[in-house]
Length: 372
Image 1 (cartoon, rainbow, N blue to C red):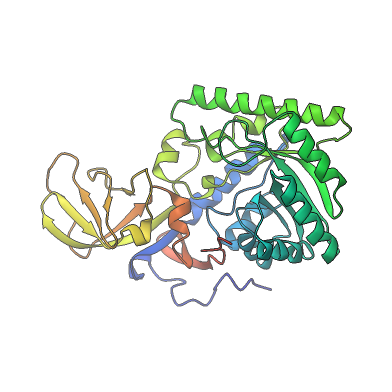
Image 2: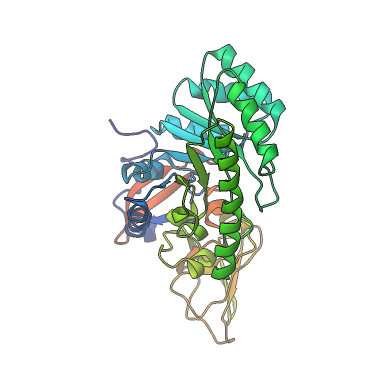
């Protein structure tokens, strides 16, 4: 039975990409499949597995392909995102975030009745809240103690503070202590590979010391989850790590691709040239509302003569790098890679899956905007 988020009878299916209304989000199926296979092959036979982060694509159709390639499930940022993934056939989700608001906690418990669910914690009061709600619902929720071992965001301090929190989880009814969660977000996109490696390993050293401390106190740690695309080959092979949460690899964007060229630029926005006010200037119909704001710039595909895009609400402005005239004319189409694929994908309800210049499938991004 086909999933409702894959629209096989969409009028765009079978048509040339050039006939799509623009701006239109595209996924290059050959590159997407290669990216999924590359990551799956890397982890095959290793102690750790990939649990890809669904915030990149927000489309269950992509998640199902990642699971078919070997992932046990997906990582999510919020309960509503996890709900969309479970509705789309994913039966194992980890919410790599704290769930605190009472409505979200109730939805988390309802989700735990339908799928294998885990969540991050860094506060004893939140542990009590989750335990009370899970017990009332008669469900069991997996818990990973989040560590702040360098990123400076959420998370318990490593060592004794994390031990105290883990002991609280272990005693709580309705909860199952599964392990520890750390994230090298402070260096995951650092251009210096040596620093990326050193800081990631420093974080994981602290994580494993905390793991050993928990074990000495009778709390065996079965899972150590971490990671991002920029460190999959670092933290993904670090002794003791059991799970990696890389997400961007499946779509990619230009800044990440420069650092991690093993994965292709599978995601783009098809735009139309709407104005040529000067020989060296090209204006497209893809602006911030299409490509999203990002510290990294959007780049035109197959047009190396164009520099990074300057985005306003509904316009993408490109200039030639050397000031020469561009050959692009009003009405021409240009594919643009967003500066941040995750943020741009979250702006679109659907994505056109393309192969050989034709639309092969239309996938709904049912987790788009799921921020609760």
